Amino acid sequence: MPEAYERYLVPVLFRPFAEDLTARAAALRPGRILELAAGTGVLTSELLAAAPSAEVTATDLNEAMVGFGSSRAPGALWRQADAQRLPFPDGGFDLVVCQFGVMFFPDRVAAFSEVRRVLAAGGRFLFNTWGPIAAHAFDDAVQAGLERAFPDDPPRFLPTVPHGYADPALVAADLVAAGFVVEEERELTLEGRAASAADVATGFLTGTPVRGAFEERGGGPAARAIIIEEATARLGPGPVVAPMTAYVFTGAA
Image 1 (tube, rainbow, N blue to C red):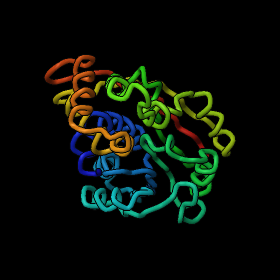
Image 2: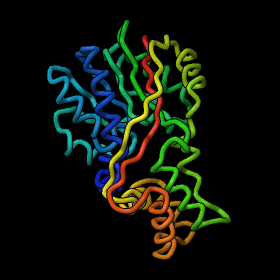
Image 3: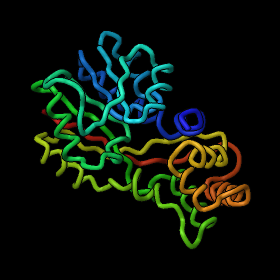
């Protein structure tokens, strides 16, 4: 899964926002950075390049992602870690960053409280979360394909998890409940560029939890073809450029 995720999805969906988060992080001039839900290391690599004097610790809950990411961004210290039980001392970091990971935390206030604990006084928590699925052309097209392929029981991972924390008022309230001051909240729409809609659909079907839901429903070549056909009908043939909306937050400790 990490290989498919890196090949098909990272350049299209995640690198544009990694570049944005990195610019915001570098402007804070942190000395000690902790990254949560680092995945295959797209943000990690950008941080290492933009803040070469900083000490970067990258973490992920998934061992496979940690192994893959450490090979892609070896300049960081990589560790497996649960965001709700961080294995680090109080006040050990100037900046905690997380790209599209907070949606996966079972208890977000608990995770944010852990982030607050490991931040030094005056530290910052910088992260993003996807907006509604309708505001993300790639994900919306793939979800439409899934609903066409499995009309009686379509997989709901995309709208309920990646796009399930799309209320900025709720995100801000969770930050405040964890002891943060919401310093900045911004809606941001960037463009993703893919070689084809088929590549994006393949990435979701092989490199994300959509894969398990697809296989549980007996998905095979025919279902895959339907999903690709629907995504292509919505996004267009050949190279695709499409908008993606997210929210970016900065919390001050």
